[in-house]
Image (tube, rainbow, N blue to C red; front, side):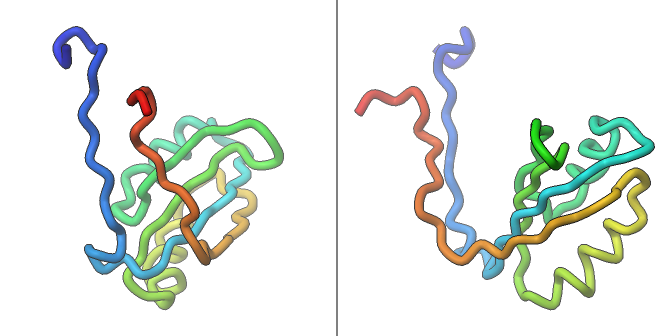
Amino acid sequence: MTDSGSLRIVAATDFAAYGYNVLVALEIKVVGRSVQAVADELAEFPEMFAVHIVTGAAQIEALVGMHRFEDLSETLMPKMIKVSGLACIEVGIVTDIVTYNFDVGIPR
């Protein structure tokens, strides 16, 4: 079934078990460059758990995992400001994970 594409096996990670104590949600507005190119470049950062191209006020949403709050200003933001095309970055700190569901398509 996996060969035919009708079954996909996915493992969900406990972020804290790997030392990721901080999750940050980013909304990113892009100008002067293709959204796809910016998203592709951001997706190369090891801190990026997910990068999505979306509709709405921002063109990209991303979920970032960090070990410490200081990693945001010391590591991630210095790398991000070098990415051409970023116009605005809204940062939201994840305070609680209510659901993180990867069992889509599994009968309940």
